[in-house]
Length: 259
Ligand code: NAP
Image (cartoon, helix red, strand yellow):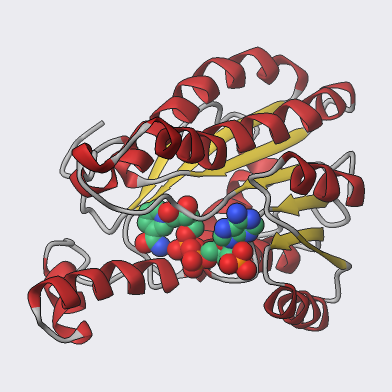
């Protein structure tokens, strides 16, 4: 399917690896020129070179922490007027409700709620003026089905979801869509770290920890960054202009719910 976005430009945050990388690759395959971001310069540079070589698009790497105002300014300076914005950043650490103090919440809110909001606020006016724009936020299945040990993530992502619910309806008249993709477990370093935590806590192998987790997923496997990227690119395509303010679960059926 031709996604109809060849020649458009995108900012993809937190994109040297994992789900962000999956989104960057799928957009590049559709002919979109990219600004990609991550904190570690080496892997980011390598990702940019690999994507540019594979798909023949322009890829500009911007190494910085996207959760800081300085990082956001650096990324926006590389493309102040993108057609597409994919918001992403690392998730907060797991723990118990009793572990978290105000500062922990502020950090999680900054990373997973206020950073995407700041970036949207910066690029939405231009998208609206040009009568076309696509924003995709990577959130989590925990928005629909809270994961007890991820209380910081549950809280911050629920806040972003509420903001998107309202804002997406305010910008839709100008041809701009905002949607969230909610990953269940995908085979990335994030999933590895979750499995490692279980493996260490329970004294079992990584393989056993992954096997146990996969047994709880109807699809009996983890998702892939490629599958995730394909959904992201579709939401950024010409065909998705009528999809507004949605929360799309990619979880292999893990969340048992009809809505
Ligand atoms: P990942 O494989 O660990 O990749 C994270 C990517 O983000 C890397 O490129 C990393 O590069 C970059 N990054 C992290 N923090 C950053 C920051 N502050 N500024 C800029 N770049 C940053 O993670 P993932 O699995 O793709 O997860 C992406 C998001 O989806 C996370 O928020 C995660 O919580 C959420 N999620 C993932 C899953 C899953 O199963 N994978 C499930 C539910 C939710 P650097 O380290 O070099 O910065």
